Image (tube, rainbow, N blue to C red; front, side, top):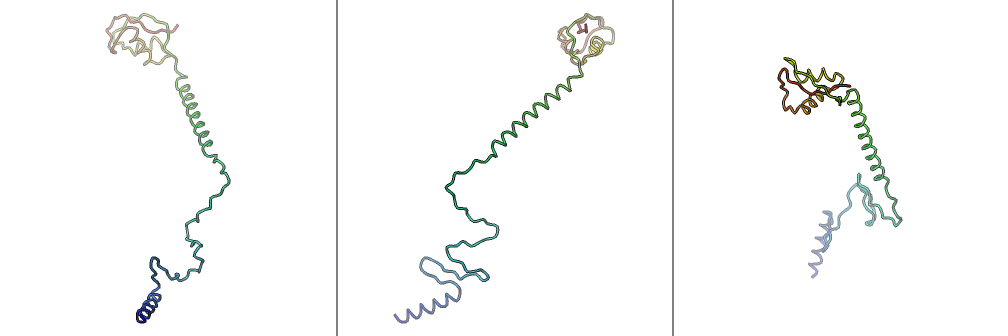
Amino acid sequence: MFEEVAMSVVVEREVREIGRVQHPGRVVRRPRTGETRRPPTRARVVAGRRSARVATCAPRSAALRWPLLLALGAAVCLGLVGLGLFASSVAGGGEATVPSGTAVVSVAPGDTLWDLAERSAPGSDPAAVVERIQELNGLTGARVDAGTPLVVPAGA
């Protein structure tokens, strides 16, 4: 029995010199060099990490972030719609519409629908006038024969 106690003291002394004393179920470590001694209940401060804040019982105020984001989104949408309306009015503002009146013309040799559109409605978009000529006469293509009478839009 005396030998066991003496042996455990020797082993314990050697283990302490290494830096760790082993007890059943836990490991006790020797403090690091250069580190200040602190009570075991106080957390060690590590650079770059914040300590956990204690929760308060006071009611939290709601962040104003969501209403501001919704208002900003609505303003952006309204701005885009306004810009689109402005761009469409500027783009279509200089062009005249296809005249509503009609006239009957005879196709001359070498004339195309584009030529007829430019002659019959000089202030209008020729592409729109060509489409209107095709609608009025039931044409499917751009080919017309010389001498054919066609109904064309004409300005009043």
